[in-house]
Image (tube, rainbow, N blue to C red; front, side, top):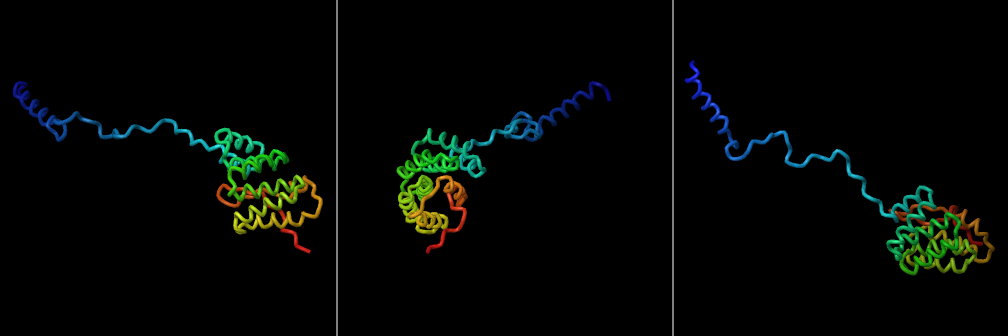
Length: 199
């Protein structure tokens, strides 16, 4: 075949290639490339944990000092956060800062009077400070708000009722209570031992 005869055939072959479906309507595209943008080379950072939630986690991990800082950070953003006030009160109690704990918890029951955990914590702190009558009233309020459903509040109330006529050492009260999770993200001050028997 001569060069002159081959030229029309090459031109015809080129025309067929250009007439493939889609090629005449739009530019060719490499099918291996996805429509979506490629994923980033580095994964995005994890979402920030809210200060109050971080405080609860630190309390559960036995880090009351660090927990207190996070609760105070939460209170800077929202001074009326009942959860942060209760958390700060519980953390202060675990650190032995009873007066500070009382202030946080008194503020908590002021801004969230329906919060049984706040009244429970206040009752425990008042008992540690030697105010058994005030502790009794606070725990009775917690019991009423809770409807008597939480065994730990019943135990705390019975313990304070037992102490009404007895002198109490603050350090012993702090040692008698532990921090225990009683619900999703809810921590309460709970008596370590069983409630004292009457009589």
